[in-house]
Image 1 (tube, helix red, strand yellow):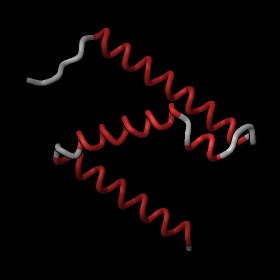
Image 2: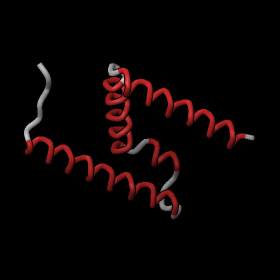
Image 3: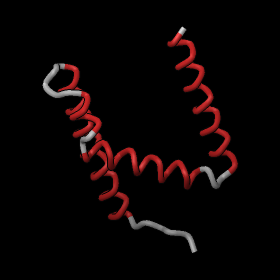
Length: 87
């Protein structure tokens, strides 16, 4: 049986995601304006949560062939960007 969310559950999930992304944006801004250190950002609980959720969703999507191919493509492009940047 598929896990189907109600409209209220979707709204709550979107609202929570928006709040996390706003906090991440504030953290990024603080880093840009030297109001915090890189260590502060990497240890931020909100960013750790976003990273965990992203990793979990990626694992779930890899079970579906089209999504798996797109994820592999994005990872390949990321590797190429890092290679070009290092040159």
